[in-house]
Length: 623
Image (tube, rainbow, N blue to C red; front, side, top):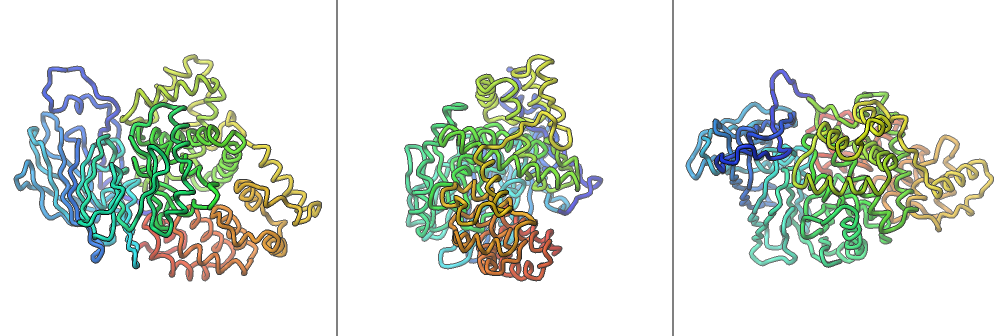
């Protein structure tokens, strides 16, 4: 990743942790701003302690021919008594004009820095009520992926700091605002956002949206395409293209059950509806927790509802992340660690502890491996509290934030007992709803409300988790009985004590199949892989998690029969979780030429989130 020089840019942002009310006689203007608990967001130019956005009116027209959006973003702002400017983050935007309370205003665009972009500094006064920016996006804006073809599609990915490439905004997770939008799109498409959404296409191609709960900019989302809607529950539904809508309706039919289970654990769902949009396969993640409308990869459509843990994860974000948000990206574990813990609890409530423990066991084993790899490169990256100064915040999206964070919360549950921990979490979400949290404030909250004695605090070893390398000595060890049985079968198979046809492949869940394939090591030969595929036709599986595990081993064992499927998989699927290990496996086995050949065919289908990572991995200059 490209690094910026901190000597040339100073980032200073105040974020909303809790609004004070010490001087109730102050004007409406902004005592809340003056009472904000301050934290530094190193990835935003904005200075919300001076002037902060509160509401957005977004008027936009989407042009598929030029792959641009013409838009006007009008913000309601609140400012301190000595405010002289408001600063918005922008990158890859062409600013046409700026107005203050309807009058043309002076503004300045600062120097652009790699991945951070530029500050858009606008002169205001303490009395300013509205700031309006008219602009056009660029075709190559990093938040966008424009999918070409007969059924053209557009989707955005704003996390972590890509919202600024399609909307000028105070692009910090610590700044929340409500929004309304009007979006004009081609008449043969439907527009959807992280807001109240339509369920049918209209002939005019104009759609109105409303988000009444305040959200940070990274949860701004837009998708435009030929999609249909199906209800799967009282508060839940799915959107997908016509060719996928039947499969999506079946695959996600249990979403309402997941929602009910989540509410039973940690309190009321605050966003009215929970719908899911199946995006094109180029989507770089498994899912994105955009409020009211999760974006999901089609790779989780397996035909047997076996991959719904991803839905449970994105649903859990409606509490951890969307409701209580990390104040900066250094606190990312507060979003993801909580969400993995909540995901496991939802899965246990709906599908039973045996299933949830298999998932937890796989996460734990993956965490052990990733910790070992990171310790060899940069041990401080194994801290829960991240150190992302001068770095792209995407660097923090590792198993540390997700699975070490989960293990920390699981340790707390085991330390104090599940009943007490559940009460703590439920109250945590309620007390801090629609606010932000940083690591130090969470520790203070934890000690005041859960670890209330020195004995408990010593037992929990909090700072060994937060600021310590690797995994602390009190990290729970997770291994499900069913995963143990898989490992035993694998071992005896490698010793020729079990013949291939007696492996209970057809009786296993996807978790067990994935574990078996992930286990393959130097003892396994190319002939062994060929025998497995002949016996169980693994190469034809419809489960993309299992297929990924197979393809990775096929590369290591030079199973050339799998290479056409490998190329098809990599050209059509842009999920970074799959791309990185598969391209890396080709590099490690001396097959860089094959990797570059496939990438040359696939790169145009990938989102920028994926291409930045792949370009670096393959030693290419990012375009």
